[in-house]
Structures are given as structure tokens and as C-alpha cells.
Image 1 (tube, helix red, strand yellow):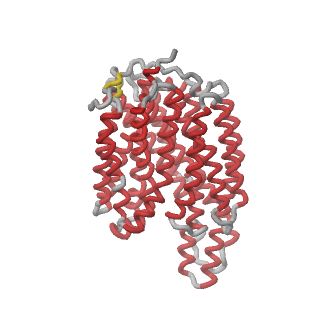
Image 2: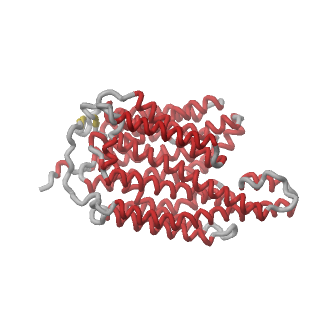
Length: 523
């Protein structure tokens, strides 16, 4: 008989709902700032370098601290670190909203990044500990992952609505009531977990992980902005070298930052690889599609967000449906079918044009999200499920760092392909007599076209929109067959992995202290 006392109760499911809210806000904060940039530029008048730091510092700091914070949570207490992160995120959100100088805004955004790095792995590792039955854990992680996805989609919609009526700082105040709710109910709904023999965090390993992650992600971002170059290559190669030293060091430590032996587990290593590929394709193509909706079709950020919502909702429904299949169908089939569906979405983009309206890209996005969102959710569950319960924090940090890598790599690769195709197309379409300098980016071309009189401006704008659409098509030509190859490779890698919840037996939690598990017990 199954030990029903270890099955999740109403308390755990209510706690999951609370944990999903900060997950939504962490990703929402990544998209909110981009909408507010024009107002921030007009109000604070930052230099181009300052504006770059304002835009990027939040994501950089989160990525750099994820592994460290996942490890720290297992040692000091996952709930304790979550509460600290929630308090810091709320205070930093207020300071960000009322920042009066570019320098202050950069600093407060950095603090938000540190707080966000506390929240993300803590929420996932708590979910791992609260849901001990594999079938329930798969559903819980799917719901948690859906919160991340929904936050990214709601960012433009909610942020656009707020910016219509309030000043730019209002978008950051959204976090305050959510964090206040988490601080109020978290100690009563969420149990505490920590590893009793965790030891101290190795500061050298922590520094190495931050340098490795930040260097590689910075290199990919430089590729996305300026194309391949010496700086981006040095950052990526240098970060990879530091990462190698980090892995070597973990093998010699009695209490490593993360257990490198986890990578010998087929489910763990394959799930991380699938996560990387999934996020690469999803983030890369959505990056270009968002530019198409705004730059080519001329939609506002708010309307763009609304057009993207159907795809996100399709992804949420597909992810929840896939979580019910995970207990009966091997992941090789679920993941492979999802990638084939995504390939069909990329194929829809083959016929897109500059005047085809939002229909084709929305249809393509629905198929892509419906195919890839379940893979992202179930892949995350496979990563944290393959790790021992006492190592859930580092595993959560690794999975989310992998997602950060995938997003940066996807935007860099897809953005570079789109830029190359754009420049090649503009070389053939560039109107005679148009000023130089507009052939590099769609934004520059539209800005130049707005200053030209009559037919000259119209011709340049039309050429730029057609050229950018060509870049979207070229990416889809590449993505569709690669996704089919990824489907075959994933099915091969996971061919021996059993369904994630093939057994409904609660798993033991050796070596992990579960504290304050009674309702109403505060830390």
C-alpha cells in the first residue's frame, strides 16, 4: 500500500499557488523594463552606456547568482532564503520605481537581480520537497513553469496598460503586494527544508560560477547586438574555460557547489540538454516575431503582447495536458511529438510576408508554444526529479541557468541569422538616393524613413520591412529541419528513460531535514 500521509494536501497545493506568483514576477520584470525605456530615457536622460546597463544588469545578476543561491538555500533553509529574497525584491522594487538618477536605477536593478536569484531556485526546490509523489510533483512543476511563461507574456500587456496612465516607475510597484502576500502567508503554508550536513558555501566556486555564466551570456548578447567579433569570442571562450575549472574544482570538494556526478544520470543530462535546445528555439524565434509584429506590422507593445497571449495560453494548456500523460507515456515520445509540432509551427513561417498581417505568425507561435512549453515544464521536472532531494537547490539553479543560457544563445543565433539576411536583402532592395546607415537594422531604417519626404521614405520603409521579413523566413527555413533533427536526437537520448511518474509511490527524503511542516508553524 502507498503511504498516503506523504501525498500532497490542500496546504501544499495552496503553497504552490503562492510560490507561482513570485515566479511570474521574476520573468515579468525582464519584459517590463523594455516597455518603460522610452519614458526612462526622457526622464533620467541616461547615456547610451548607462541605458545598456539599466536594461541588462537585472538579467545578468540573476543568471550569475542562480547556482550559488540554489546551493545556499539547501544550507541555510529554502524557505528562509525565499523570505529574504521576497523582502529584498519588494524593497528594491520601490527603490527602482522612485530612482532619480541613472546610477541609482542601475544599482537598484542589480539588487533586484540578486533578490530574483534568491526567489527562482528557492521556489522550485521547495516545490520539489513539498510534492513527494512523482505524479503530483510533475503536475506541480508544470504549474510552476507555467507561471514563468505567463509572467513573460503578461509583462507587455500589464506594463503597456500601466504606462498608458502612469509614470514608468509604476511597472515596478506591481511586485510590492505580491511580495507582501508571500511574506505574510509563506511561513504558514511553506515548510522549511535544509540539508543537515551542507557545510559552508565554497566562495571560490561561487565566484567561478558567476564569472563563467556572466562571461558566456555577455558574449552571446554581444553577438546578438553587434554580430560575431573578438570581444564576444573572448568572453565565450574565457567563460567556458572558467566553467571547466569550476567543474574540476567540484570534484575535489567535500561539499561542492553542485554535484557533477549528477551529469552521469541519463535523465538529468538529457533533460538539461533538451531544456537548452527548447529555450534556444522558443526564445530566439519569439524575439524575432515580436520585432516583426512591432516593426513590420506597426503594432504597439500592448497590442503585440495581446497577439502573443493566444500562443502562451496554448502552451499552458498543452503543458498541463502533457503532465497528465507523463505518468503513462515515456518522455522520448512526449518530447519528440512536441518538437515535431513545433517544427510545423516554424514551417508556417515559410509563407509569411510583410503584408500578411498577424495571422501567420500567431498561428506559428501557437504551434511552437503548444509543442515546446510541455518540454520545458517536463524537462525541468526531470532535472529536479533526477537529483537527490537534499540537492534540489543546486539542481534547480542548474536548470534555470541552463534556461538563461538557452535564451541568450537563441537570441544571439537567431538574431545574427536575421541580421545577416536583413543586410543581404537590403543590399538588393536599398532605394537609390536613400541615406547610408539604414541598411543595418530595421529600427534604423524606419527612423531614417520617417525623416524622408513622400515616396522616398515610403520606399525605404517598405524595403526594410520586406528585408526583415526575409530574415524571419530564413530563420524558419533553418529552424524547422533542425527541430525535426532535435526530435530524433531527443527520442534517442531518452529512449531508456521511464515515464516520469510511472510509480505513484512517495519517494524517501534521506539526509534532508523537513522542518516546520505543521500548519501554522512559523520559522
